[in-house]
Image (cartoon, rainbow, N blue to C red):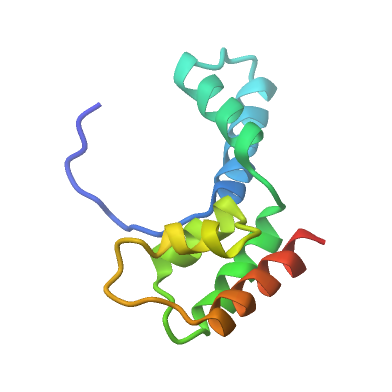
Length: 117
């Protein structure tokens, strides 16, 4: 498939992608269409690695974006991976030019724990 032009771009969490893929799958199954190999693999991947609901994931991203040292890309990564330790969280910030304090790390982990409930 050749893409001529990108109309819009939006960062999505894996949970949100899972929801969209399930909608596509239901629509295709309703019309007795066969699911392609790529679609089946994408659905399998999303089901395997998604850790929460799309609503909770988007809510977590919005809460994370309110923090001072949070970029949208990192917020989505945090919502996808759901790090539970400081070391896991530090690995997401490894390429950044700044480091987080222990308090900032704990604050992010607390937000992740709230989203897991």
